[in-house]
Length: 398
Image (cartoon, rainbow, N blue to C red):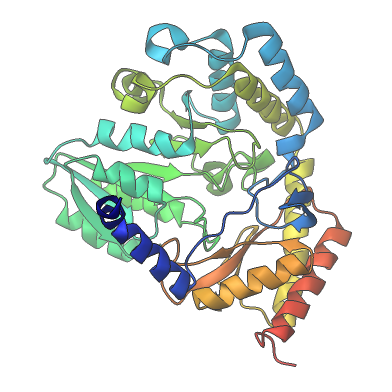
């Protein structure tokens, strides 16, 4: 027994270090459907930190569609897509997503995370290839890059001049792939995608954008960052997730028909992992249908965002450089952010602290996620809680 305990001593040491630094994440349990008001650890609170941008996670139309999927096709597909797991509803979802994104074709996958891992090692696998990636890109992009032997060039965040410098350094490589988030998930700022595409064209580079936080948020009817900037046809690989604004689970890749067909032959996360379930796919189809027919929820999301962020700034909170519904409340040290989150929870608001390594040291925050599911009463309740916590913890001046 003593030997076994010594074997895991490094775990105890690291756990103790995380707790001392205020970086230990005490994961709370939600005991109700996602919505504006939820039950967390037995307490009813206002939900201000989920990615349920449009309120789809518990939407009756999506729930009913999921039930229809179960009734018609059963619980699961039973195989990977490339052998015996591609079912008619997968094709329907991909066709609707392609129409929604204004692209030639789309490939659906199990998550946005694995969608990034599908593209990167398939497109730029070798030492003769180059990847030019934003320093603040999502962890799924970083992990996808690690799966290749390609040369890595990391450019300063949203700095197109530095991107061009890195492209000049990479000119001798056979293939070049520029990768960026569309909306950066921790800060809520938007990539200068039009300028990135212009530079890519000059250097013969391919472009890849992770639009996980852009779909349902930016562009007409929430169709994403390419529509927001009028860049249809200029981005080689658009990565999407179905677990945020769409309210379900899954991911997808949108682009030219030839690139999607190539990925069906090469992408390991497509070839070696089971297809998404009927219930998930049917619910996602329902979400796409709603968005293609109405921009009501997207408008509500932005109305809520403008109101909440404006009031927070009036109170004196630092909301960083956000240009989207992602609202970081910058607090500095991880322990301060954890204390603030705990105080908010006592006041009836669920908003989690985020610290290193998710964000750099010294830039811990409460990341508030605005939703179309919130009404004005919800937002005012949250604002009062933030103000009270801010004064009690001496974040705001009295």
